[in-house]
Image 1: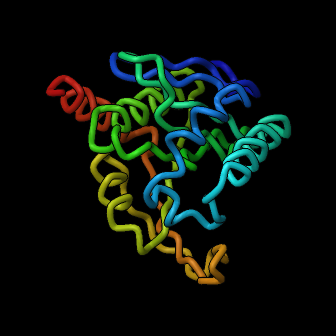
Image 2: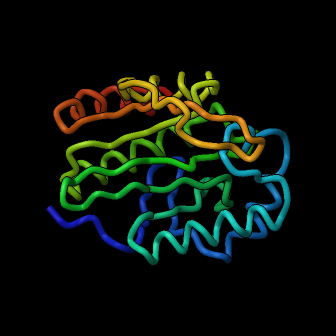
Length: 198
């Protein structure tokens, strides 16, 4: 097993490729990311091009500090970025990691893109890096995200109350989920079944 790296690897599947995030993705992410209410449940406000730039800059700063491995989510059929995601909350001594800051533009939601991206990330975490746990979390009010996380096989662990102060000043409760190493073979098989149907 290799150590969790400090540079994001390229992860490629049938529908999606996760490329290391860079400022070169900014224009495209602005183009697709500021419509609708994609970032409604984010603690910080993402409503302008400057907000998107700050989001990417923070991700790259965290990568340099060894805290995150951010990706642009690329639709393989077109080669275009359709969102972003990252590994975060990296605990190398304990071999635990979290998947978060995931967003996908509306036109690509409810497609195989998110399922395969999570599959590729978890497969990398468990099989390449020997992780013991992959965590995910979401706003307790975000029912769609809670259902999507459960659908990929993660188990709900509990709620951290008053976990974050959002841009509006609302106190956010965060729901935590995880997949642990012992569960991965069954989760992997189910995700592969889902992807085979798409």
